[in-house]
Length: 554
Image (cartoon, rainbow, N blue to C red; front, side):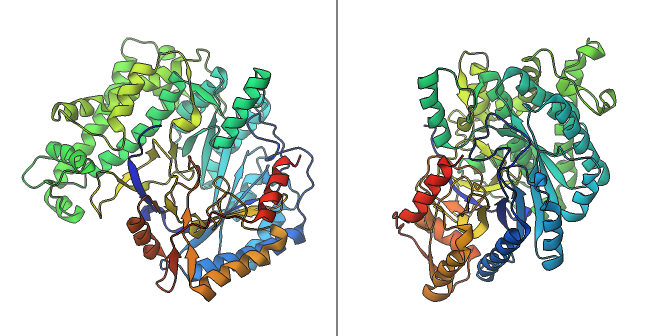
Protein backbone atom coordinates (compact mmCIF):
# COMPACT_ATOMS: atom_id res chain seq x y z
CA UNK A 1 0.00 0.00 0.00
CA UNK A 2 1.36 3.42 -0.99
CA UNK A 3 2.15 5.74 1.94
CA UNK A 4 -0.72 8.09 2.77
CA UNK A 5 0.82 11.55 2.58
CA UNK A 6 -2.36 13.61 2.53
CA UNK A 7 -3.79 14.44 5.95
CA UNK A 8 -6.75 16.68 5.04
CA UNK A 9 -8.78 17.89 2.07
CA UNK A 10 -10.92 21.00 2.04
CA UNK A 11 -13.49 22.27 -0.42
CA UNK A 12 -11.72 24.55 -2.88
CA UNK A 13 -13.19 28.05 -2.70
CA UNK A 14 -12.55 28.71 -6.41
CA UNK A 15 -15.14 26.05 -7.27
CA UNK A 16 -17.88 27.67 -5.21
CA UNK A 17 -19.91 25.95 -2.48
CA UNK A 18 -22.43 23.50 -3.77
CA UNK A 19 -24.55 20.54 -2.67
CA UNK A 20 -24.60 17.92 -5.41
CA UNK A 21 -27.73 15.79 -5.67
CA UNK A 22 -27.19 12.94 -8.11
CA UNK A 23 -30.49 11.49 -9.26
CA UNK A 24 -30.46 8.14 -11.03
CA UNK A 25 -33.79 8.14 -12.86
CA UNK A 26 -33.63 4.48 -13.88
CA UNK A 27 -31.48 1.77 -15.40
CA UNK A 28 -32.89 1.94 -18.93
CA UNK A 29 -30.08 2.66 -21.42
CA UNK A 30 -29.45 2.40 -25.15
CA UNK A 31 -25.86 1.24 -24.54
CA UNK A 32 -24.59 -2.06 -23.16
CA UNK A 33 -21.03 -1.35 -22.00
CA UNK A 34 -19.29 -4.42 -20.57
CA UNK A 35 -17.92 -2.44 -17.60
CA UNK A 36 -21.38 -1.24 -16.56
CA UNK A 37 -23.09 -3.76 -14.29
CA UNK A 38 -26.67 -4.95 -14.68
CA UNK A 39 -27.28 -3.21 -11.37
CA UNK A 40 -26.61 0.05 -13.20
CA UNK A 41 -28.19 -0.48 -16.62
CA UNK A 42 -30.45 -2.59 -18.81
CA UNK A 43 -32.62 -2.19 -21.92
CA UNK A 44 -36.02 -3.10 -20.47
CA UNK A 45 -36.78 -1.26 -17.20
CA UNK A 46 -40.01 0.72 -17.08
CA UNK A 47 -39.59 4.51 -17.18
CA UNK A 48 -40.30 6.53 -14.05
CA UNK A 49 -43.67 8.25 -14.26
CA UNK A 50 -44.09 12.02 -14.12
CA UNK A 51 -46.03 12.13 -10.83
CA UNK A 52 -43.55 9.78 -9.17
CA UNK A 53 -40.68 12.11 -10.13
CA UNK A 54 -42.55 15.21 -8.93
CA UNK A 55 -43.14 13.62 -5.53
CA UNK A 56 -39.45 12.78 -5.13
CA UNK A 57 -38.48 16.30 -6.19
CA UNK A 58 -40.61 17.82 -3.43
CA UNK A 59 -38.81 15.67 -0.85
CA UNK A 60 -35.43 16.67 -2.32
CA UNK A 61 -36.35 20.32 -1.98
CA UNK A 62 -37.19 19.90 1.71
CA UNK A 63 -34.03 17.85 2.40
CA UNK A 64 -31.73 20.40 0.74
CA UNK A 65 -33.47 23.31 2.46
CA UNK A 66 -32.79 21.77 5.90
CA UNK A 67 -29.07 21.32 5.27
CA UNK A 68 -28.81 24.75 3.65
CA UNK A 69 -30.31 26.40 6.75
CA UNK A 70 -27.44 25.06 8.88
CA UNK A 71 -24.61 25.96 6.49
CA UNK A 72 -22.60 29.05 7.44
CA UNK A 73 -21.68 29.71 3.81
CA UNK A 74 -24.40 30.28 1.23
CA UNK A 75 -24.58 26.96 -0.57
CA UNK A 76 -26.07 26.51 -4.01
CA UNK A 77 -27.49 23.16 -5.13
CA UNK A 78 -27.02 21.22 -8.35
CA UNK A 79 -29.32 18.37 -9.32
CA UNK A 80 -27.49 16.06 -11.71
CA UNK A 81 -29.55 13.50 -13.59
CA UNK A 82 -28.03 10.18 -14.55
CA UNK A 83 -29.01 6.57 -15.22
CA UNK A 84 -28.96 4.41 -17.30
CA UNK A 85 -29.41 7.10 -19.88
CA UNK A 86 -31.77 9.82 -18.60
CA UNK A 87 -32.76 11.13 -22.03
CA UNK A 88 -34.41 7.83 -23.08
CA UNK A 89 -37.20 8.50 -20.57
CA UNK A 90 -40.02 10.13 -22.61
CA UNK A 91 -41.00 12.17 -19.52
CA UNK A 92 -37.50 13.52 -18.93
CA UNK A 93 -37.46 16.89 -20.68
CA UNK A 94 -41.04 17.64 -19.68
CA UNK A 95 -40.10 16.91 -16.06
CA UNK A 96 -37.03 19.16 -16.20
CA UNK A 97 -39.23 21.97 -17.57
CA UNK A 98 -41.56 21.43 -14.58
CA UNK A 99 -38.63 21.84 -12.17
CA UNK A 100 -37.63 25.07 -13.88
CA UNK A 101 -41.18 26.41 -13.58
CA UNK A 102 -41.80 25.20 -10.00
CA UNK A 103 -38.44 26.20 -8.49
CA UNK A 104 -37.32 29.15 -10.61
CA UNK A 105 -33.58 29.88 -10.24
CA UNK A 106 -33.32 27.74 -7.08
CA UNK A 107 -31.46 24.78 -8.59
CA UNK A 108 -28.68 24.35 -11.07
CA UNK A 109 -29.52 21.46 -13.35
CA UNK A 110 -27.08 19.13 -15.05
CA UNK A 111 -27.03 15.62 -16.45
CA UNK A 112 -24.63 12.87 -17.44
CA UNK A 113 -25.50 11.54 -20.88
CA UNK A 114 -24.02 9.46 -23.68
CA UNK A 115 -25.15 12.23 -26.09
CA UNK A 116 -26.71 9.95 -28.68
CA UNK A 117 -29.78 12.15 -28.95
CA UNK A 118 -30.77 13.88 -32.23
CA UNK A 119 -28.64 16.98 -32.85
CA UNK A 120 -31.60 19.37 -32.65
CA UNK A 121 -32.09 18.26 -29.02
CA UNK A 122 -29.02 20.33 -28.16
CA UNK A 123 -31.01 23.58 -28.35
CA UNK A 124 -33.54 22.21 -25.84
CA UNK A 125 -30.68 21.17 -23.55
CA UNK A 126 -29.17 24.66 -23.75
CA UNK A 127 -32.39 26.19 -22.44
CA UNK A 128 -32.85 23.73 -19.57
CA UNK A 129 -29.39 22.82 -18.25
CA UNK A 130 -26.63 24.85 -16.65
CA UNK A 131 -24.10 22.13 -17.35
CA UNK A 132 -23.93 18.66 -18.86
CA UNK A 133 -21.37 15.86 -18.85
CA UNK A 134 -20.98 13.75 -21.96
CA UNK A 135 -19.62 10.26 -21.32
CA UNK A 136 -17.67 8.92 -24.28
CA UNK A 137 -17.78 5.10 -24.47
CA UNK A 138 -15.57 3.35 -27.02
CA UNK A 139 -17.59 0.11 -27.06
CA UNK A 140 -20.50 1.82 -28.81
CA UNK A 141 -21.23 1.25 -32.48
CA UNK A 142 -19.10 3.48 -34.79
CA UNK A 143 -22.23 5.19 -36.13
CA UNK A 144 -23.30 6.14 -32.60
CA UNK A 145 -19.80 7.39 -31.76
CA UNK A 146 -19.80 9.62 -34.82
CA UNK A 147 -23.13 11.04 -33.66
CA UNK A 148 -21.69 11.66 -30.18
CA UNK A 149 -18.68 13.55 -31.55
CA UNK A 150 -20.99 15.57 -33.79
CA UNK A 151 -23.16 16.47 -30.79
CA UNK A 152 -20.08 17.40 -28.73
CA UNK A 153 -18.95 19.84 -31.40
CA UNK A 154 -22.48 21.21 -31.78
CA UNK A 155 -22.75 21.79 -28.02
CA UNK A 156 -19.61 23.87 -28.23
CA UNK A 157 -20.92 25.80 -31.24
CA UNK A 158 -24.16 26.82 -29.47
CA UNK A 159 -22.37 27.80 -26.25
CA UNK A 160 -23.54 25.02 -23.93
CA UNK A 161 -21.37 24.60 -20.82
CA UNK A 162 -20.19 20.98 -20.72
CA UNK A 163 -17.32 18.59 -20.23
CA UNK A 164 -16.50 15.17 -21.65
CA UNK A 165 -15.73 12.14 -19.49
CA UNK A 166 -13.54 9.97 -21.70
CA UNK A 167 -13.85 6.42 -20.37
CA UNK A 168 -10.29 5.07 -20.69
CA UNK A 169 -10.84 1.51 -21.93
CA UNK A 170 -7.87 -0.82 -21.32
CA UNK A 171 -8.24 -2.56 -24.67
CA UNK A 172 -5.33 -1.30 -26.83
CA UNK A 173 -7.45 -0.14 -29.74
CA UNK A 174 -10.09 1.47 -27.53
CA UNK A 175 -7.50 3.15 -25.29
CA UNK A 176 -5.85 4.78 -28.27
CA UNK A 177 -9.21 5.78 -29.67
CA UNK A 178 -9.60 7.71 -26.40
CA UNK A 179 -6.13 9.24 -26.83
CA UNK A 180 -7.00 10.23 -30.39
CA UNK A 181 -10.24 11.88 -29.28
CA UNK A 182 -8.54 13.83 -26.48
CA UNK A 183 -5.43 14.89 -28.40
CA UNK A 184 -6.89 15.54 -31.84
CA UNK A 185 -10.50 16.60 -31.24
CA UNK A 186 -11.02 17.92 -27.71
CA UNK A 187 -7.67 19.56 -26.93
CA UNK A 188 -7.32 21.58 -30.17
CA UNK A 189 -10.85 22.90 -29.69
CA UNK A 190 -10.24 23.64 -25.99
CA UNK A 191 -13.12 21.39 -24.94
CA UNK A 192 -12.93 20.48 -21.26
CA UNK A 193 -12.46 16.74 -20.70
CA UNK A 194 -11.48 14.26 -18.00
CA UNK A 195 -9.79 10.91 -18.74
CA UNK A 196 -11.76 8.59 -16.46
CA UNK A 197 -10.30 5.37 -15.11
CA UNK A 198 -12.76 2.46 -15.36
CA UNK A 199 -13.50 0.69 -12.10
CA UNK A 200 -13.16 2.34 -8.71
CA UNK A 201 -15.03 0.21 -6.21
CA UNK A 202 -12.94 -2.40 -4.42
CA UNK A 203 -15.90 -4.80 -4.26
CA UNK A 204 -16.05 -4.77 -8.07
CA UNK A 205 -12.36 -5.62 -8.32
CA UNK A 206 -12.79 -8.50 -5.86
CA UNK A 207 -15.76 -9.82 -7.84
CA UNK A 208 -13.69 -9.74 -11.02
CA UNK A 209 -10.91 -11.65 -9.26
CA UNK A 210 -13.38 -14.34 -8.17
CA UNK A 211 -14.85 -14.54 -11.68
CA UNK A 212 -11.37 -14.78 -13.16
CA UNK A 213 -10.55 -17.81 -10.98
CA UNK A 214 -13.78 -19.52 -12.00
CA UNK A 215 -13.91 -18.64 -15.70
CA UNK A 216 -10.29 -17.69 -16.51
CA UNK A 217 -11.72 -15.02 -18.85
CA UNK A 218 -13.88 -12.07 -17.78
CA UNK A 219 -16.25 -10.87 -20.49
CA UNK A 220 -17.76 -8.01 -18.47
CA UNK A 221 -14.90 -6.63 -16.37
CA UNK A 222 -15.96 -3.72 -14.17
CA UNK A 223 -12.40 -2.87 -13.11
CA UNK A 224 -9.88 -2.38 -15.90
CA UNK A 225 -6.18 -3.26 -15.61
CA UNK A 226 -3.93 -0.97 -17.65
CA UNK A 227 -0.57 -1.63 -19.25
CA UNK A 228 2.34 0.40 -17.88
CA UNK A 229 2.24 2.58 -21.00
CA UNK A 230 -1.44 3.27 -20.45
CA UNK A 231 -1.01 3.89 -16.72
CA UNK A 232 1.92 6.19 -17.48
CA UNK A 233 -0.15 8.18 -19.96
CA UNK A 234 -2.98 8.71 -17.45
CA UNK A 235 -0.60 9.51 -14.60
CA UNK A 236 1.45 11.93 -16.70
CA UNK A 237 -1.70 13.75 -17.74
CA UNK A 238 -2.64 14.37 -14.09
CA UNK A 239 0.93 15.11 -13.02
CA UNK A 240 0.98 17.85 -15.62
CA UNK A 241 -2.27 19.20 -14.21
CA UNK A 242 -0.75 19.20 -10.71
CA UNK A 243 2.32 20.99 -12.05
CA UNK A 244 0.18 23.59 -13.81
CA UNK A 245 -1.24 24.46 -10.39
CA UNK A 246 2.31 24.55 -9.02
CA UNK A 247 3.46 26.81 -11.85
CA UNK A 248 0.49 29.07 -11.17
CA UNK A 249 1.52 29.17 -7.52
CA UNK A 250 5.05 30.19 -8.59
CA UNK A 251 3.60 33.44 -9.89
CA UNK A 252 2.05 34.13 -6.48
CA UNK A 253 5.16 33.53 -4.39
CA UNK A 254 8.16 35.75 -3.64
CA UNK A 255 10.79 34.95 -1.04
CA UNK A 256 12.35 38.11 0.36
CA UNK A 257 15.69 38.86 -1.28
CA UNK A 258 15.57 35.94 -3.75
CA UNK A 259 15.03 35.75 -7.50
CA UNK A 260 11.85 34.31 -9.00
CA UNK A 261 13.81 31.17 -9.93
CA UNK A 262 14.82 30.72 -6.29
CA UNK A 263 11.24 31.42 -5.30
CA UNK A 264 10.19 28.40 -7.39
CA UNK A 265 12.44 26.26 -5.21
CA UNK A 266 11.03 28.06 -2.19
CA UNK A 267 7.58 26.84 -3.11
CA UNK A 268 8.79 23.24 -2.98
CA UNK A 269 10.45 24.03 0.35
CA UNK A 270 7.03 25.06 1.61
CA UNK A 271 5.50 21.82 0.37
CA UNK A 272 8.03 19.74 2.31
CA UNK A 273 7.64 21.76 5.47
CA UNK A 274 10.56 24.19 5.48
CA UNK A 275 10.13 26.79 8.24
CA UNK A 276 12.70 29.24 6.87
CA UNK A 277 10.71 30.58 3.93
CA UNK A 278 8.68 33.75 4.39
CA UNK A 279 5.97 34.16 1.79
CA UNK A 280 4.55 37.57 1.04
CA UNK A 281 0.94 38.09 0.08
CA UNK A 282 -0.12 37.73 -3.56
CA UNK A 283 -0.92 41.45 -3.73
CA UNK A 284 2.48 42.50 -2.38
CA UNK A 285 4.34 40.21 -4.76
CA UNK A 286 2.42 41.30 -7.84
CA UNK A 287 2.91 44.97 -6.95
CA UNK A 288 6.70 44.51 -6.66
CA UNK A 289 7.53 41.97 -9.33
CA UNK A 290 4.95 41.98 -12.15
CA UNK A 291 7.62 41.73 -14.86
CA UNK A 292 9.26 38.69 -13.23
CA UNK A 293 5.89 36.97 -12.89
CA UNK A 294 5.25 37.36 -16.60
CA UNK A 295 8.77 36.15 -17.37
CA UNK A 296 8.13 32.95 -15.43
CA UNK A 297 4.87 32.36 -17.29
CA UNK A 298 6.63 33.07 -20.58
CA UNK A 299 9.34 30.49 -19.75
CA UNK A 300 6.65 27.84 -19.41
CA UNK A 301 5.10 28.83 -22.76
CA UNK A 302 8.50 28.78 -24.50
CA UNK A 303 9.31 25.36 -23.07
CA UNK A 304 6.00 23.99 -24.34
CA UNK A 305 6.72 25.36 -27.81
CA UNK A 306 10.17 23.75 -27.75
CA UNK A 307 8.48 20.39 -27.26
CA UNK A 308 6.57 20.88 -30.50
CA UNK A 309 9.57 22.24 -32.43
CA UNK A 310 11.89 19.38 -31.44
CA UNK A 311 9.28 16.69 -32.10
CA UNK A 312 8.45 18.08 -35.56
CA UNK A 313 12.07 18.61 -36.66
CA UNK A 314 12.93 16.65 -39.80
CA UNK A 315 9.52 15.03 -40.09
CA UNK A 316 6.85 15.17 -42.74
CA UNK A 317 3.44 16.40 -41.68
CA UNK A 318 1.93 12.93 -41.69
CA UNK A 319 4.68 11.73 -39.32
CA UNK A 320 4.01 14.39 -36.69
CA UNK A 321 2.88 12.75 -33.42
CA UNK A 322 -0.85 12.94 -32.79
CA UNK A 323 -0.27 14.89 -29.60
CA UNK A 324 1.33 17.74 -31.57
CA UNK A 325 -1.00 18.06 -34.59
CA UNK A 326 -2.17 21.66 -35.09
CA UNK A 327 -5.87 22.46 -35.08
CA UNK A 328 -5.84 23.61 -38.69
CA UNK A 329 -4.46 20.28 -39.83
CA UNK A 330 -7.21 18.33 -38.09
CA UNK A 331 -10.48 20.09 -38.87
CA UNK A 332 -12.61 17.06 -39.69
CA UNK A 333 -15.89 16.78 -37.84
CA UNK A 334 -15.21 13.13 -37.11
CA UNK A 335 -11.96 11.32 -36.40
CA UNK A 336 -10.26 8.06 -37.30
CA UNK A 337 -8.63 5.50 -35.07
CA UNK A 338 -4.85 5.54 -34.71
CA UNK A 339 -3.26 2.51 -36.35
CA UNK A 340 -0.22 2.21 -34.10
CA UNK A 341 -1.86 1.44 -30.77
CA UNK A 342 1.16 2.26 -28.60
CA UNK A 343 2.45 5.33 -30.44
CA UNK A 344 0.25 8.14 -29.05
CA UNK A 345 0.62 7.17 -25.41
CA UNK A 346 4.42 6.86 -25.59
CA UNK A 347 4.85 10.14 -27.47
CA UNK A 348 2.63 11.97 -25.00
CA UNK A 349 4.65 10.52 -22.10
CA UNK A 350 7.89 11.73 -23.67
CA UNK A 351 6.44 15.18 -24.31
CA UNK A 352 5.17 15.43 -20.75
CA UNK A 353 8.56 14.34 -19.37
CA UNK A 354 10.41 16.92 -21.45
CA UNK A 355 7.98 19.64 -20.44
CA UNK A 356 8.98 19.73 -16.77
CA UNK A 357 11.98 17.41 -16.36
CA UNK A 358 14.52 20.22 -16.42
CA UNK A 359 12.73 21.98 -13.57
CA UNK A 360 12.59 18.80 -11.49
CA UNK A 361 16.26 17.99 -12.08
CA UNK A 362 17.24 21.45 -10.89
CA UNK A 363 15.23 20.97 -7.71
CA UNK A 364 16.84 17.56 -7.08
CA UNK A 365 20.34 18.97 -7.44
CA UNK A 366 19.70 21.49 -4.69
CA UNK A 367 18.57 18.84 -2.20
CA UNK A 368 20.22 15.57 -1.30
CA UNK A 369 17.33 14.37 0.81
CA UNK A 370 14.44 15.73 -1.24
CA UNK A 371 10.98 14.71 -0.02
CA UNK A 372 8.00 14.95 -2.31
CA UNK A 373 4.67 14.84 -0.43
CA UNK A 374 2.56 15.30 -3.55
CA UNK A 375 4.48 12.61 -5.49
CA UNK A 376 5.34 15.04 -8.29
CA UNK A 377 8.92 13.84 -8.67
CA UNK A 378 8.72 10.25 -7.49
CA UNK A 379 5.93 9.26 -9.86
CA UNK A 380 7.91 10.58 -12.85
CA UNK A 381 10.95 8.50 -11.90
CA UNK A 382 8.89 5.37 -11.22
CA UNK A 383 7.02 5.60 -14.51
CA UNK A 384 10.24 6.18 -16.47
CA UNK A 385 11.57 2.88 -15.12
CA UNK A 386 8.35 0.92 -15.50
CA UNK A 387 6.72 2.13 -18.69
CA UNK A 388 8.21 -0.62 -20.87
CA UNK A 389 7.95 -3.42 -18.29
CA UNK A 390 5.62 -6.40 -18.53
CA UNK A 391 2.42 -6.53 -16.49
CA UNK A 392 -0.57 -4.33 -15.85
CA UNK A 393 -1.81 -1.83 -13.30
CA UNK A 394 -5.33 -1.92 -11.82
CA UNK A 395 -6.95 1.41 -12.63
CA UNK A 396 -7.98 2.20 -9.07
CA UNK A 397 -4.31 2.07 -7.95
CA UNK A 398 -3.28 4.93 -10.25
CA UNK A 399 -4.99 7.63 -8.19
CA UNK A 400 -7.95 9.95 -8.64
CA UNK A 401 -9.12 13.41 -9.61
CA UNK A 402 -12.36 15.19 -8.77
CA UNK A 403 -15.17 14.07 -11.12
CA UNK A 404 -16.09 17.69 -11.71
CA UNK A 405 -12.49 18.66 -12.45
CA UNK A 406 -12.24 20.84 -9.32
CA UNK A 407 -8.92 21.78 -7.80
CA UNK A 408 -8.42 20.25 -4.35
CA UNK A 409 -7.15 22.13 -1.31
CA UNK A 410 -5.03 19.78 0.76
CA UNK A 411 -2.67 19.37 3.66
CA UNK A 412 0.16 16.84 3.82
CA UNK A 413 2.22 15.33 6.61
CA UNK A 414 4.62 18.26 6.16
CA UNK A 415 2.07 21.11 6.16
CA UNK A 416 1.93 23.83 8.76
CA UNK A 417 -1.34 24.10 10.71
CA UNK A 418 -2.97 26.72 8.46
CA UNK A 419 -1.13 25.86 5.25
CA UNK A 420 -3.17 24.50 2.36
CA UNK A 421 -1.93 23.73 -1.15
CA UNK A 422 -3.74 22.90 -4.37
CA UNK A 423 -3.62 19.72 -6.44
CA UNK A 424 -5.66 18.31 -9.32
CA UNK A 425 -4.95 14.63 -8.70
CA UNK A 426 -4.36 12.55 -5.56
CA UNK A 427 -2.05 9.57 -5.91
CA UNK A 428 -3.57 7.77 -2.96
CA UNK A 429 -7.20 7.98 -1.86
CA UNK A 430 -7.25 5.64 1.12
CA UNK A 431 -9.07 7.76 3.73
CA UNK A 432 -10.21 4.91 5.95
CA UNK A 433 -10.79 6.17 9.49
CA UNK A 434 -10.93 9.83 8.39
CA UNK A 435 -13.81 12.12 9.35
CA UNK A 436 -15.76 13.12 6.25
CA UNK A 437 -18.53 15.69 5.61
CA UNK A 438 -20.00 13.83 2.63
CA UNK A 439 -23.57 14.16 3.95
CA UNK A 440 -23.29 17.98 3.98
CA UNK A 441 -22.40 18.18 0.29
CA UNK A 442 -23.94 15.16 -1.50
CA UNK A 443 -27.12 13.13 -1.87
CA UNK A 444 -27.69 10.18 -4.20
CA UNK A 445 -31.12 8.89 -5.27
CA UNK A 446 -31.78 5.69 -7.21
CA UNK A 447 -35.39 6.07 -8.30
CA UNK A 448 -35.99 2.65 -9.82
CA UNK A 449 -34.26 0.74 -7.02
CA UNK A 450 -36.05 2.77 -4.30
CA UNK A 451 -32.79 3.63 -2.50
CA UNK A 452 -31.31 6.85 -1.13
CA UNK A 453 -27.62 7.15 -0.19
CA UNK A 454 -25.54 10.07 0.98
CA UNK A 455 -23.26 9.28 -1.94
CA UNK A 456 -23.35 6.90 -4.87
CA UNK A 457 -19.90 5.29 -4.48
CA UNK A 458 -19.13 5.53 -0.75
CA UNK A 459 -22.73 4.69 0.31
CA UNK A 460 -21.91 5.46 3.94
CA UNK A 461 -24.66 6.43 6.37
CA UNK A 462 -24.47 8.53 9.55
CA UNK A 463 -23.81 5.21 11.31
CA UNK A 464 -20.44 5.11 9.47
CA UNK A 465 -21.32 1.81 7.77
CA UNK A 466 -22.19 1.09 4.15
CA UNK A 467 -25.98 1.23 3.86
CA UNK A 468 -28.77 3.41 2.44
CA UNK A 469 -30.07 6.31 4.50
CA UNK A 470 -33.59 5.28 3.50
CA UNK A 471 -35.99 4.47 0.67
CA UNK A 472 -37.32 6.85 -1.99
CA UNK A 473 -40.83 5.62 -1.19
CA UNK A 474 -40.23 6.51 2.50
CA UNK A 475 -38.37 9.79 1.97
CA UNK A 476 -40.39 11.44 4.75
CA UNK A 477 -38.62 9.15 7.26
CA UNK A 478 -35.21 10.39 6.03
CA UNK A 479 -36.30 13.98 6.54
CA UNK A 480 -37.74 13.22 9.97
CA UNK A 481 -34.45 11.68 11.17
CA UNK A 482 -32.50 14.67 9.85
CA UNK A 483 -34.77 17.09 11.67
CA UNK A 484 -34.31 15.13 14.91
CA UNK A 485 -30.52 15.49 14.59
CA UNK A 486 -30.36 19.17 13.64
CA UNK A 487 -33.47 20.74 15.19
CA UNK A 488 -34.01 18.38 18.11
CA UNK A 489 -30.66 17.11 19.44
CA UNK A 490 -28.62 19.95 17.90
CA UNK A 491 -25.89 17.44 17.02
CA UNK A 492 -25.18 15.11 14.13
CA UNK A 493 -22.75 12.19 13.64
CA UNK A 494 -19.50 13.01 11.86
CA UNK A 495 -19.10 10.19 9.33
CA UNK A 496 -16.00 8.02 9.77
CA UNK A 497 -14.89 6.55 6.44
CA UNK A 498 -15.12 2.72 6.44
CA UNK A 499 -13.51 2.21 3.02
CA UNK A 500 -10.01 1.57 1.66
CA UNK A 501 -10.72 3.74 -1.38
CA UNK A 502 -12.46 7.06 -1.97
CA UNK A 503 -14.14 7.52 -5.32
CA UNK A 504 -16.30 10.47 -6.33
CA UNK A 505 -16.64 12.70 -3.28
CA UNK A 506 -12.94 13.02 -2.51
CA UNK A 507 -13.28 16.80 -2.93
CA UNK A 508 -15.50 16.96 0.19
CA UNK A 509 -13.94 18.34 3.44
CA UNK A 510 -12.30 15.50 5.36
CA UNK A 511 -9.42 15.05 7.77
CA UNK A 512 -7.32 12.34 9.34
CA UNK A 513 -6.98 13.94 12.79
CA UNK A 514 -9.85 14.99 15.03
CA UNK A 515 -8.66 18.57 15.58
CA UNK A 516 -8.58 19.40 11.85
CA UNK A 517 -11.87 17.56 11.33
CA UNK A 518 -13.58 19.71 13.96
CA UNK A 519 -12.09 22.86 12.43
CA UNK A 520 -13.55 21.92 9.03
CA UNK A 521 -16.94 21.09 10.54
CA UNK A 522 -17.22 24.44 12.31
CA UNK A 523 -15.98 26.25 9.21
CA UNK A 524 -19.10 25.15 7.34
CA UNK A 525 -21.73 24.36 9.97
CA UNK A 526 -23.42 26.89 12.24
CA UNK A 527 -22.32 26.87 15.87
CA UNK A 528 -25.74 25.70 17.08
CA UNK A 529 -24.86 22.17 15.88
CA UNK A 530 -22.06 20.00 17.30
CA UNK A 531 -20.49 16.95 15.62
CA UNK A 532 -20.72 13.51 17.26
CA UNK A 533 -17.17 12.23 16.80
CA UNK A 534 -17.61 8.62 17.96
CA UNK A 535 -19.00 6.44 15.12
CA UNK A 536 -21.98 4.20 15.85
CA UNK A 537 -20.79 1.40 13.51
CA UNK A 538 -24.18 -0.32 13.88
CA UNK A 539 -26.42 -0.12 10.84
CA UNK A 540 -30.09 -0.61 10.05
CA UNK A 541 -30.68 -4.33 9.24
CA UNK A 542 -33.81 -3.60 7.20
CA UNK A 543 -32.10 -1.04 4.98
CA UNK A 544 -29.02 -3.23 4.58
CA UNK A 545 -31.22 -6.13 3.46
CA UNK A 546 -33.00 -3.85 0.98
CA UNK A 547 -29.63 -2.79 -0.44
CA UNK A 548 -28.59 -6.44 -0.82
CA UNK A 549 -31.84 -7.28 -2.60
CA UNK A 550 -31.38 -4.40 -5.00
CA UNK A 551 -27.82 -5.50 -5.81
CA UNK A 552 -29.17 -8.93 -6.74
CA UNK A 553 -32.08 -7.36 -8.64
CA UNK A 554 -31.90 -8.06 -12.37
